[in-house]
Length: 223
Image (tube, rainbow, N blue to C red; front, side):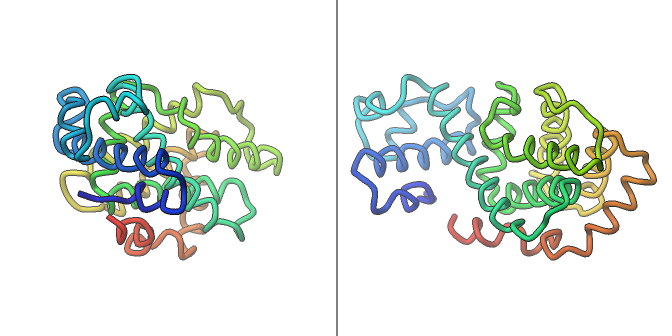
């Protein structure tokens, strides 16, 4: 079993470490059985804990499913935000974030499977992780490179494109042409013409963060 979130909580108190282990166990079970078919008994058995311990941290299966997907999405988003420190243009940040988020979720297949499973149950735009995407789009609007209203409806459409691409590749290999189409479609959704979207992707594709072989290294090596 992967122990990424338990490892992340080392140095914290026992409660944080236990919660991290339960999230790791939930991800393991959800990734193999799907959220709908998984049970709390299976999660606690995977963690080697009693059901009572589970209920000290989570209300029910929906609660731990939400916590697990939030933990995954926020971890990916925070790492991408840190890596894009030197990238100022909002439009470029949207492309790099969309491309690299999918690459990381594919490199860490259990994470990708859980994200897709939860997406089918709950809107992704509600995730705190999408505040990073909201911020990048708003930056592009402030820079006068986009003219859109940044609301939940726009974010949910972007999430649909990303999750559809992720779901389509989870059972096979990463396909750069599908990543490119997804990013172009996101740019078009943000108001760019097909030609502008292609030109922007071509410009940003020279950025090292769009290397599909490097995007997932920091996380997948831990799983």
